View 1 (cartoon, protein in one colour):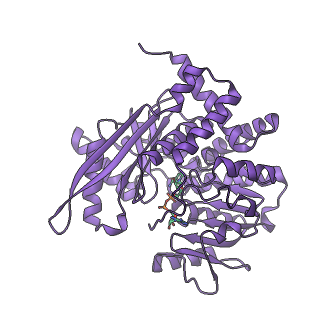
View 2 (tube, rainbow, N blue to C red):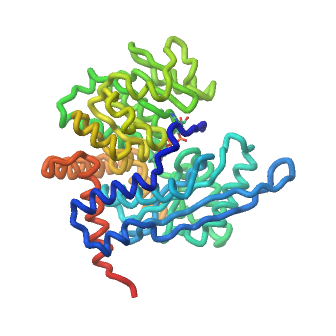
View 3 (cartoon, rainbow, N blue to C red):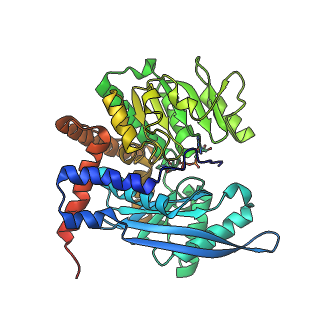
Amino acid sequence: MTTERAAPAINPWHVAQQQFDIAAEKLNLDPGLRQVLREPRRELHVHFPVKMDDGSVKVFEGYRVQHNLSRGPAKGGIRYHQDVSIDEVKALAMWMTWKCAVVGIPYGGGKGGVIVDPKKLSRRELENLSRRFFTEIEVLIGPEKDIPAPDVNTTPQVMAWFMDTYSMHVGYTVPGVVTGKPIALGGSEGRNEATARGTVFCVIEAARHLQIDLKAATVVVQGFGNAGSIAARLMSDEGVKVLAVSDSSGGIHSPAGLDINRVIAWKAEHGTVVGFPGAQAVSNTEILEIECDVLIPAALENQITASNAERIHAKIVAEAANGPTTPEADEILFRRGLFLIPDILCNAGGVTVSYFEWVQDLNRDHWSEKVVNEKLHEIMTKAFAETLAISLREGAHMRLAAYLLAVQRVADATAMRGLYP
Ligand code: NAD
């Protein structure tokens, strides 16, 4: 998958801590607990060698961070991207803690990343890198300890290599050590679509609340990978007109609506949505400003900031990506009456079906896609309703409401366990 960073100046870790501080203040959280929850519990920084196809050795750098383990083992994806940094991984790990708490699944937050542009590696180099990175972080990993999953540029194939590497080391097959695996290796039905499906469930609930008829609505999607392309397809299945989509190479816009299955086929053939016949070109900054009912950022962090929030013309912003909106932009969107579904709720479908996958693996079970989607629907709509109720009660935007729900749950679990020793 191709990925480029649009606005690297804003530090996502500062954003994550700022979001936490706002919620901690409002909850009047105990100062000691506040210090504990404000920092990650563990940060592992590794340098590891990989043999390249030309016989040379290259050393790569990667991280695994566990933010809070009070509610269960760490859970969170591994990202391969040239701009990965420790601060990005720390932010993503903290967001995972809140996300698992919002949807009420028994995990703490973790995240990992390797500084690499995987487009520049051969398949064999990618496998070598994946197996050696997993070996290096294995001190933290295990089905009862820390269970990784896919994120930007990591696929079911990469998860299969991770699972095999761990299984080789312990001497038997351990499917529950990672999620997002191919179905043949203990992956769950519906996992591939889960992030996008959870986002669409949230959009449906938001539209019901705002009395927007989705059959007459329009959507714009930034990012056309696992989360974005499937969200565009599922929105189209709901009868929503897809006006524009983009990937790291640029975007395409058609006021008459895009045939999303044809765009997916085009991307599969050409590696990008750019050049799709009959559509106008649009940049990744312009795409956010197109007038629409639903805007789905599904790429990377810091896309909606104080500098463009006044120019966003959507009724609903549904954050399929992690961290696409800064705290300053949150306030601007809220003041302007836009309804934002925050990442820790909106993209929680991915980790929820990862949890289903882990439960199936531990029980040597396999559920049908119908069962998976029904359980996902139940969890997402419950979390949405609980968040909306807090938002209405407190007069707070949906991000603050989701944080109030999540931080309280994690704070309660942490306080009840008490301080060891
Ligand atoms: P992916 O690698 O499958 O796709 C990323 C997409 O974003 C690609 O189409 C890429 O071209 C595009 N992109 C990169 N930079 C861009 C830019 N500056 N402007 C526009 N497009 C750009 O990754 P993914 O798994 O779909 O993840 C996307 C987002 O969703 C990330 O924020 C990730 O953390 C979040 N997320 C993913 C999952 C999951 O299960 N995959 C779960 C929760 C959240």
